[in-house]
Amino acid sequence: MRIAIAGASGRMGQMLVESVLSTDGLQLTVALDRAGSASLGQDAGAFLGRDTGVKITDDLAALAQADCLIDFTRPEGTLVHLEACVKHGTNIVIGTTGFDEHGRAAIDVAAQKIAVVFAPNMSVGVNATLKLLDMAARLLNSGYDVEVFEAHHRNKVDAPSGTALKMGEVVASAWDVALPDVATWTRHGDTGVRKPGTIGFSVVRGGDIVGDHTVYFCGPGERIEITHRSSSRVTYAQGAVRAARFLDGKHNGLYDMQAVLGQ
Image (cartoon, rainbow, N blue to C red; front, top):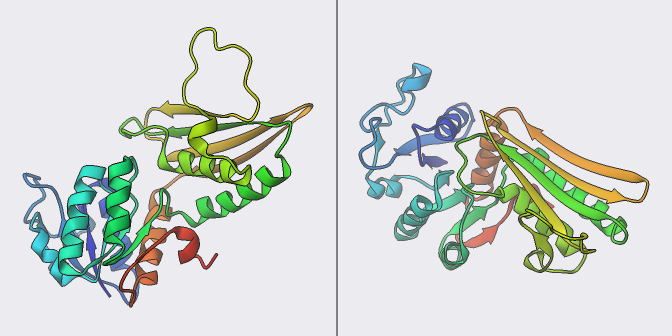
């Protein structure tokens, strides 16, 4: 299976390149980076001391040489790549977060023509955590206040994280409500007494934190905490590679990691 990597010179891109090169049945055929990047023309495996024969390029026509693109870049870049994937019939795994409604709609439209895995977090552990949250939210559906806490490195530009939003959506869905109707995004000054049934969000940005997420169910006399902590981006890369293999042979459709994991 021929794989393309977007943002191939970035931290996540390099992790993806390494994962593809070490996975049987996958072949790295395309490595993309933004126009003007100092990495253009370099071998995609140079950071590993390997000669892969794949030069980093900004030419999206190269996607014609790939069966699937894995993209963890930025929404504006991913949407450009998505359009090129549709043009060349290349499937795509999207781990990018921070899309607005327009971006999400574009992904929905593209999935009518190519196969797409779109998930805020590709980690198998995170997706197991989402299952636990659904179970807890159904059991703790009355008398418990829910808070979603997340922490990431200083360079992350969207907040709350896509994973935190997904966690909130899972709890809201278990309560049969829409997250925008019950979410509390900020608190400052005299906020008053907490409104029952709301879901609060707290965000930390600093240092090189890969990703911490905790959902608190705070009730009378007890507190339940469900936590996932990432110590390496390798879990995201491994999940993305698994998602790419899941798309092999598929021609269209929109899938999430629960589908990839057979849930």
